[in-house]
Length: 132
Image (cartoon, rainbow, N blue to C red; front, side, top):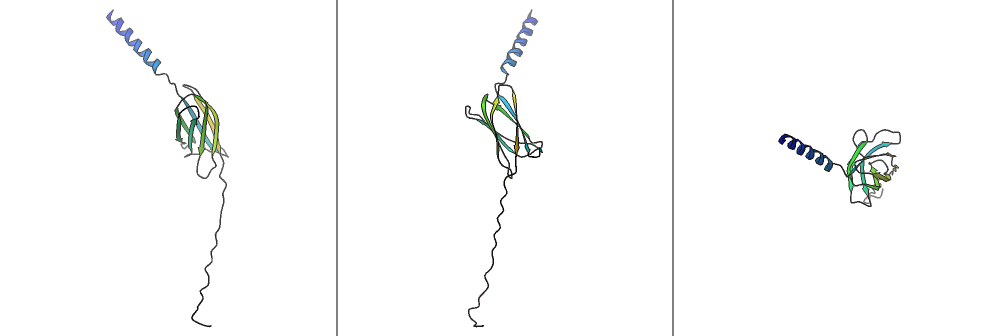
């Protein structure tokens, strides 16, 4: 009987412990590519929602992906992505649910390049001591 009570108590602790371990946050997987579809590493991606206090930032890895974790549930997440040399891009109204993963694909295009050339010329030296 004593063994049965120990076994029952252990079982109850395991079951209630796993019930408390249920996640109440969600995850956004972000995949960032360029216009040709190639993965872009080093992109800063930020997820934020107006109706929550959650704001998380990650950097994409070599495969162009980043995982943003521990996001409060909301249907109003905005995912911003930016990388030097590329324009910024944004995904709006991303839905995050408890214990689920949302996937967002973002394509960055090359930023407009503006070149400027400055030409300077030295003025000739004028000899003010000689008349010739």
